[in-house]
Image (cartoon, rainbow, N blue to C red; front, side, top):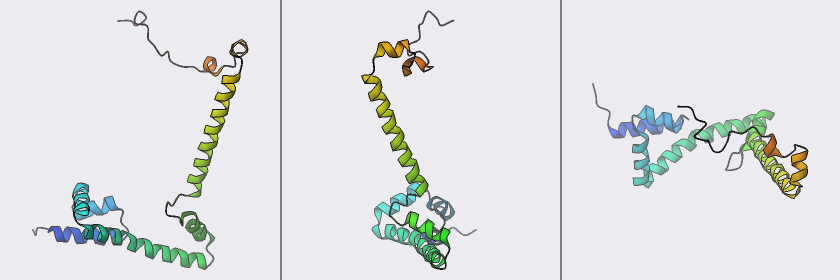
Amino acid sequence: MDQITPEQQYEELLRALREGVPMNMAITLSGFSKSEVARMRRADPLIDRQIKHAMLEKERIVLASLLRSAADGNTDAARWYLERRSDDWVTVADKAKLKLAKERWRLEQEIIKAELQADPARMVAENTMPALQAKREPDVIDVDEVED
């Protein structure tokens, strides 16, 4: 059985990346380990550039096809491209989740501020203090209550 050389492994890695295979899978297919590829990229700027270029080749081809499809009237393709045209590729769904998280945080801050300004005696009397409503485990366990 023939021994595969590191050069052949490297060519297999680049070929897989050019085909659009994700990096982790391409590394596995090539026979390298993740740490070997990371060391190679750090040690040789040319290898790092070649790997980046190989990954971008397939993306360029896919993007060109997507843009042709959008130009032909495919609104889904156009929407997908427009959602991801920035460098961060944040989707509309991700932006919506972030907006909701920010709004939830803002509302929680308003509630805390209102609670700090409220009359604690009235809140206790009305049983509206969140700490009284929360069902929490005790912060401290009494060792006398623990059975052997």
